Length: 356
Image 1 (cartoon, rainbow, N blue to C red):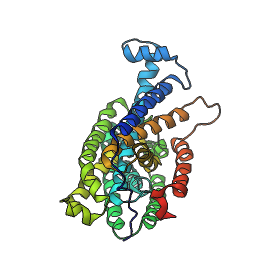
Image 2 (image 1 turned 90 degrees about the vertical axis):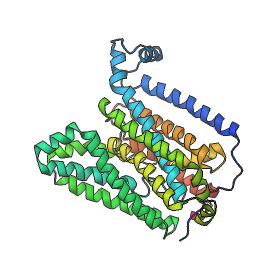
Image 3 (image 1 turned 30 degrees about the horizontal axis):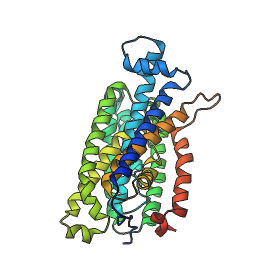
Image 4 (image 1 turned 120 degrees about the horizontal axis):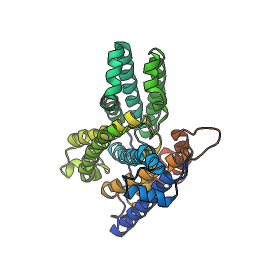
């Protein structure tokens, strides 16, 4: 197997550099969140936004718009973007592949299929099962997505030990296209009610999470973040190869299981609640490495989480601008940003040199 090693041999990160980068990302994220809360189909002055945030009991039109619509959406974007960014770091380190992420390697496709089969199964089982799915939508779709993501992740991890980076990427993309075809066929044969449940979810969005579902989304992602942090130190040794990692006492098999579990917990709830959100997990690890100046996993995790959250909120801001004629899809905005970044990385980044 030929794999593309990530640049783990760079000098250790200077704390001032990644701390400064983290502070800058936090400030940019706050600015993007306030802009998204303030501007949309209904413009709300920034003063009213701040007042509504610090005085949630005020029953005003602006307060209701913020509490019921914009705050949940921005919160979901922050959690989802951070989760996908962290998952991208884990996958690229675990596979030693700079083009690995949950979308490009088909993990989201697996989650997508799991959700589709969950909806289809409830629809075929009858109105009672569909009503149960509506009531317990969050748990049902998360479990379906987790099963699909886990199966796809195990398949990718097994295949990644036998083929090169480019072959693995092509297989992941073909898996994604195949699953999308299967999903279309499955949804075609369910009832209209079942198709509506699946509906706009398939395009990716941060606006579909209900207030009662938010603790489930944030809670599962939080567990994934904790496990990702536990993987940081042993993953550093794995960047230089299995033999080197084993010589340092790293239990590689156990590490793979732990990192795989963290990835599933990060990707599955985001896929279940927000749909297949593309490009964030692919480009954010590279942004984090550029800020940190290293491939060490410890500094990359917070930088990737903040960068992913910032990218997700910024994309959501563009989607919900007061466009006059058409509605923009989230993945369309992310593709317009992500595709040029990937092309630039392929052309100019030393990390991608082995793919050219």
